[in-house]
Structures are given as structure tokens and as C-alpha cells.
Image: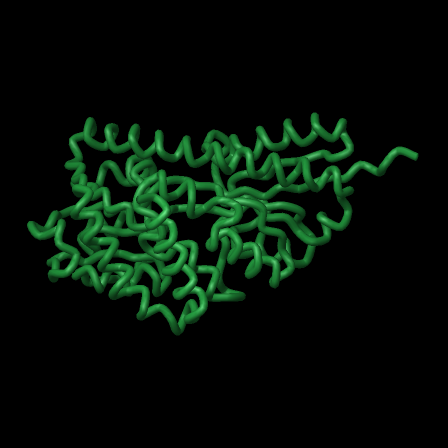
Length: 318
């Protein structure tokens, strides 16, 4: 007897022309072709099925089948480990740190799995940086106080890191960030890639500092209920397709960073690129000063595990 068609409702966060949504649409075509129509995928971009926190809850319940979304931490603060600053400093390190078999990947599989959701891959959207309306003279030194009030996302990982780097911080909802930068409520912000700074804040920021402080990444997720419906063959097709486009996202993110840093410069924005030595100083500051402060939130196990994994990765690269 022919297998019953499995229909997948695939939730996304971004506009139809965004690279992440394009990856979802390419995944749809590939999966439907590879399964000879046994699996049908319908993509819902632009938060049509709810914001990422709602989608994650529905994935847990099995009322949404798949999502390519920010992974929220309201059910487990340890999930914020994916935003820990300086897990990687460049794209060569990203290709090792965010891949299957890495400590970070295996940790996310386990933590997300414990919540009843299948983690399949990281979608990489680019390195974060600092969009500023004013630039302190000592911006290259992560250990000195800076006369800049920096908006950070509502996570200790961002707040503690920024304050350890000498910034004052302020909590402003993202929806109000543009106006806050415009009116001086904040002098800058951490949490966005060069692409996001160009697309949404190029008319209000004057400087973009390429700090590579974190990777803006999302999760390819599936509900356990969907997984139970799929045959082993179709599970492999779905997982392999997700990983294929996740890997492509790293190359695309690297190119997008390059292109949008140039677009910011063409717009008249001062793009500050830290040297390798300066970036190394920022990374060492994060790992030696900030990471230990996050042990209570992320646990000793995860901090020690990431430190050991990074040390091994660096030793292997030499």
C-alpha cells in the first residue's frame, strides 16, 4: 500500500526574499522531489505562525511541524550557549564549531531534544558587531571604560560581555531601537550583523565596529510528532536537506558580511575593522573574564566543555 502523504507546516521568521526564507523554499523543493511527493512542505515566512517563542512551544506540542527560528531560552537558560561570545573568531572556526559532531552541536541536540524538539542544524546569518552613533577613541581595547551607552538584547550573555568590555548598557526593546539611536537614548547597539545594520539602521548609525563577538544563528527544528510520522528513509532525506542548506548558509553569511560591510562604507558609515591581534584580545577578555561569570546561568559543565573544545580546536589547527 502507498504510504500516506506527510504534510509539513514549516514556520519561519523572515520576509519572503530573506536568505533564510529562500533556504526554506529550496528545502521544500528538494524534500518533495526526493520523497516523490510522500512529504509535502508548506513554508510560512514572516512570523505568520507566531513569533519564535510561540513557534517553539507549538513544536513541543506537535501543532507546528518544523521551524527555522531563533531558539528561545525560556524553558532552559543553557540554550543561550549558542550566543556565548567568541565561540568562533572567523569563518574557518565557525565551520568547525557549528558543525555536526562538535561540542556545541551535540550540546544543542541534547538540550533541545530534552524539550521534545528535534535539532537538525544551525543556520548561520553572520557575525555580530557594534552599530554606533559615536565612536570612543579606545574602541580597540576591550579592558577600558568607554563613554558609550550600548543597547544589548535581554540576555546576560550580552549584558555581562558588554559591561566587561567597558560599555554601559541599557535595555531597549528591539522595536524601539531605531528611535532610541536617533534620539540618543542609546549610543549604539550590540546584537546585529553588518547586513542587519545596513538594512535597518544605516540612516541612524555612524560607525560599525567589526568585533565578530558572536554568531547570529538559528535552528533547523522539527517536532517529535512529525519525526514519528516519517519513515527512516524520509527522516534521512529531511535531515540531510536541512544540513545541506545549513552548510550553505555559512558560505552565504561570509559573503554577506563582506558585501554589507562595503555597503555600509559606501553609505558613508565608518567601518572599523579590528586587527587579528585586537580581535584576539577581545576574545581572550570574553573567555577569561566573562565566561566564568556565566557559569551560574549556563552551568560549569557547559562552560568547561566549551573551553576544552576550543582549546582542542586551536591545538589541532597549529
